[in-house]
Image 1 (cartoon, rainbow, N blue to C red):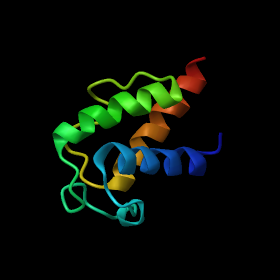
Image 2: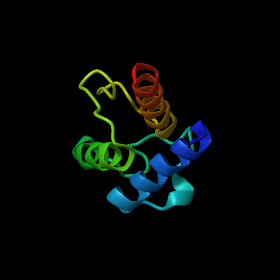
Image 3: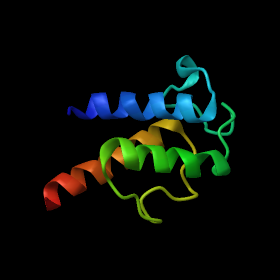
Image 4: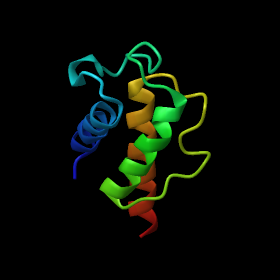
Length: 86
């Protein structure tokens, strides 16, 4: 799956799990500005792990992540690392 498709699917998951308008989820959008809390992110991470068959560790998506783009980049990196290690 191309990275652009992965990033789009992550945005879809964010929209679904957090009841946020998908159009608001630009790469530059700050999570708190679109109404996504750290508590929401726990559910999002579970959904992403299930969708892609990956395990996201504590260091993969940390508290320093503030934007939608940072989330999608972090997930894409985990997937790429998982493929490289497979």
